[in-house]
Length: 215
Image (cartoon, rainbow, N blue to C red; front, top):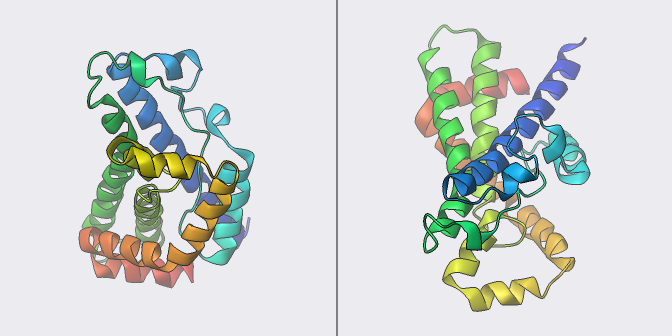
């Protein structure tokens, strides 16, 4: 296996498991608040197969890899019923919505710190791999705060500005096209914010090592 093929496979695996953990977080928080919908649907599992969306989990990450984007992807949304969040009906939907991005941020911190502690003198490929995982999750976490369906930010809008949310809902299938357009226009800003976040936690040197190995 060539280095380029290994890099490609590693990238796809990291993106898939990052989006799976993101969705799992939604389901586990919902269950902790009283809603077993995700569990009954077989979605509280680390097995990626039930979570994969053919377009968002496979096709889009492949395109992003060759386009040089860190990790634009999504999995099938984990189902939950807000009416069954009996342990916190008022704030439960907010907690469920934030669980995914919060998980991505936690992964950013864990992997970025691991990369930081390996510098200076650590294996360059390992530092680059750890930094890449952090970058993917930084990108996903920021991406999912965009207030456009199907991202989690749209759920937050529905809680705080239902009128705006209702207007977005009227887009129907066009919402996905709108989301792609927003991401395309904002990709540079999202990537810059992701790099800045990882550099702040892992150190600029870790990002330089990553760029040296990945380029």
